Length: 345
Image (cartoon, rainbow, N blue to C red; front, side):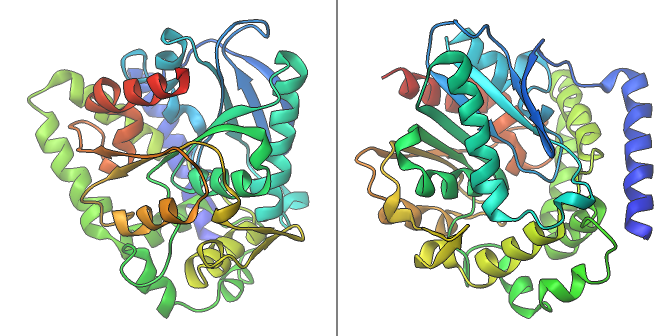
């Protein structure tokens, strides 16, 4: 399939950029748990003190955006503040994972990671954080296993779908059923296909923002360095298994089942009202992709006694503002200190 070939070409371009000095500068880690399609990484010793944080990246790209370079690394920021981070690295799904959907990615796999963390730290509850689609998975997990969460951090995570909730909503409403698309794909849904759909859906964001950010970064060497490293990261396409793609499109985007309280995951009902953990959402105020309207109603639906919203005002050098809350300098000066202070309260 042509998109698989494009994926390979983009990964090759990424390796060339690595040789040009733009490879991620990742924090030393150790592997705690590995089972297809994921690897769980730890950055402290098992007996280290401090709150435990399980990080759930979006499964459509590599996880090192959370640990891109020392000055803009969520992992390093956590370590400096006495937080024990565990990072899920999603691996390429194989033929045996094509039937893995929300029941696996939002429940079984995250529970297995928490069990592995508990086995080495004794922590039966952890903070869980997720960005974008990773935040959606984290929120569904929090609804299924509320007793396992000490707190929930959602960064630019869309949770309410339908009219007025972002650029993807009208496209999904007009699109054919996801199954008719995946029927044309021999195995995974290629990352470059997802990338092409994103560009066609919101060209002003995925192309216009990128070019504007590059232009604004030229006068700022530090910002330009981050911009180029993020651009290199965008080439690390990660495919989705067919079933996960179908369920995200149909059950979440098209039918809004999670917010409607009708989402069945592995035979269990996942509803926002089941969430009782303290909650922080980080929202990009002017986002065309995930506007406040797709996040704020979720806060009214949960039963958490402590719910907070942090507004992300944007950065230079982040390629897309959607990514800035992980790698932006302002995010690491304003957003992450507030999140980590909250974890220590």
